[in-house]
Image (cartoon, rainbow, N blue to C red):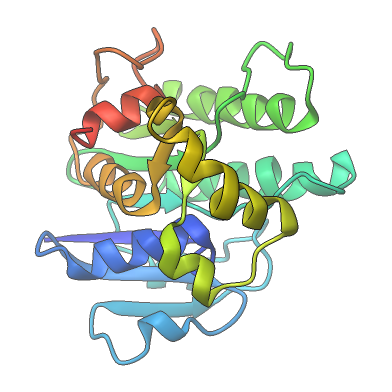
Length: 242
């Protein structure tokens, strides 16, 4: 059974990943890096919550706690709405790059898989018109660069489009006005005609965990970019059996 690392466990995607990982018979331990306690992990023997305040630093004592891990699902993130580019860049690019540099040295038998939850519209060529696309695209590119220099380290960039939280999440969590209007009003009308842009948190979590537990090799098929490691929303849906 596998030991995986997870960030963003209190967020939309990360909380779904946590639930799926804790229920997976293939996972024995989930080390959760979080700035605050994670209520969903309370009492679960698989969960190891590590309070971590500085996501640019991974001292030896922290890496010791992560020893034995063979994958990381980086679900930490934030909406770019209303944010300055430098602040958004720190969270979206600086943090995962620092983690990847640290985790690439964790000894593994096969490959260490780093699954980065990016987003539709990310552009590794720096040509995106929107700030989030440029920043996420550059994060993807640099993560792939780290992987190319380390044969035992693989990176998968996931690009979900409209992440559907479902009614339970809408009822139980706070969300911004745009999310509330879209998923409560527009989404039900669009799903029958534009199903390809949607992915549920459960299915996104399922694919994230499958990649984390996989062999670290390239994936192929519709919705997969030529590099074999960047997966568009349509590819995520296909891998989830939708």
